[in-house]
Length: 83
Image (cartoon, helix red, strand yellow):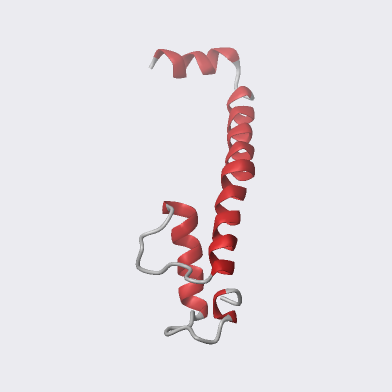
């Protein structure tokens, strides 16, 4: 919200709720297109957030999932493979 509202010539400045909506839509679906950053700073910020999630958060969550699956015994994991 701060980055997008930094420029004075915006027709519709972002409110707090629109900013939260933009972040949620960006992180979960990579955008709907109804709201999007129009300033270069906002676009750079959203790009960095997307890269952070792709490079750091998704691999961390995948590793945690693999670790939790490996906590089960070999025989319990064999049930996943057969089904």
